[in-house]
Length: 179
Image 1 (cartoon, rainbow, N blue to C red):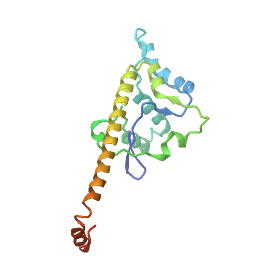
Image 2 (image 1 turned 180 degrees about the vertical axis):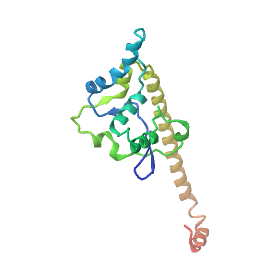
Image 3 (image 1 turned 90 degrees about the vertical axis):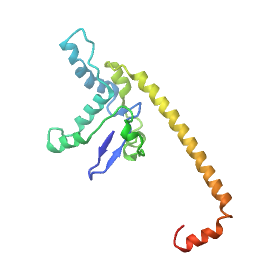
Image 4 (image 1 turned 60 degrees about the horizontal axis):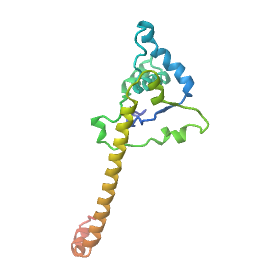
């Protein structure tokens, strides 16, 4: 999810597999299920309309914003919600917004809702697929981290091994103001 802060900077957050939204599960289900049952009222042969995690999250955010005002409409236009990390953003550095961390923001005794479970119960069929993709992503990122750490270790060893040979040249470079 990308959002612009008050002053226009962009921050990139990833919607993790077990996204948590504040109201307790039962209360959130009472909010989500009636909108999912809308399709059932129109055509009884269909069970639910597929409310996926993105739609539920978008509606939860829309409920927190004055979306009928000009300022609220502009804020909703800036909100982008994705399943996973799409191609233009997968190469960007990810940042952690400490003020949005679950451990810091919610009281430990406060109940919360799991978007995966909630959307699965109202007809979303891709819970296993997203779980598989998330496990693959974590394995790939762990391998990348290990490889990067090994490269940094080898680079520092190479610098140490070559330091004695390049010491006279390094003094000349430093005399010109470079490090």
